[in-house]
View (cartoon, rainbow, N blue to C red):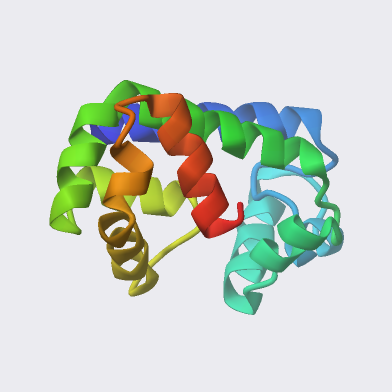
Length: 147
């Protein structure tokens, strides 16, 4: 399962980096300061991570970010939910689990915020999973998270 998530994220990241105006470190302040080569991408990724600007840049479309990456993220979420729907539904009823944590990551919830996402799924379980349909679950989760 972790391999599936890693493959989806990696493929989304690789295709996004070739389609966009930045390197493998992604868009953000780092992509503006450092040009594309192996060593500078390490510095770019470190800059993006330490300045915590990448999420804002993706949301606002600034710092070399555009909506091309958002389409890839939406497809990764859809693919993940479709491939793991039963496991996600089961863990969402518990309010925790590996599949829910990975889905939280795809929605941008990290660290302590992962539990917040899991709780959101658990509280809205009937709305999200009532129809037993992955596409409807995706739409409802998107509505609840406003992503």
